[in-house]
Length: 105
Image (cartoon, rainbow, N blue to C red; front, side, top):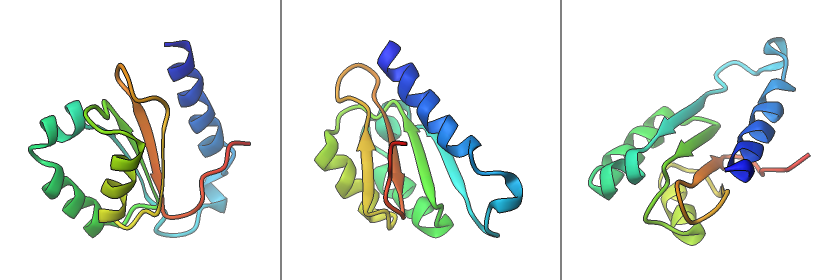
């Protein structure tokens, strides 16, 4: 739980460091509690299609169950994100996908 909280705080700090005036027009962040990875993967294709249509720069996901890091990378590729990280693969994992490289600073 502490590790998950720390991961979320780091993600929020990374987002907070960008002042609203410095955001480029059209930058979009999606934050989604996927309910066991899009309802136990029943809605994975429709969720991926919606994300591909929206073209967000980053996607933050909660309850990323039933998938490992490699599976998350394949899923993120469906909406055009070549970069994906998971905090952990057990419990209730959180993940971040991006169209740009992800750095921990």
